[in-house]
Length: 81
Image (cartoon, rainbow, N blue to C red; front, side, top):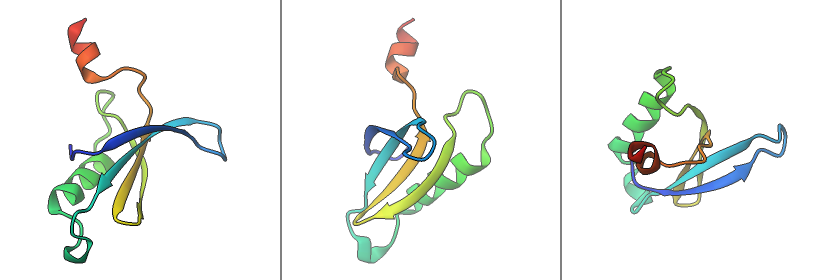
């Protein structure tokens, strides 16, 4: 997927722990990069137990935030098993 910072957060309505992937848009005036649009569309359409679901997405300043299910381990840890 697109490179971004990931933060752990709590949904204040449901109490659910989620991951927030913050993707900076370097040139906001040029629009959202097509690679990010593709990632969002793919995550919205793929329903597979091996793909982390996308709950929602929104813009915040010069970034796009993807709200996803929170995984407590990363891919590197899983592959090392």
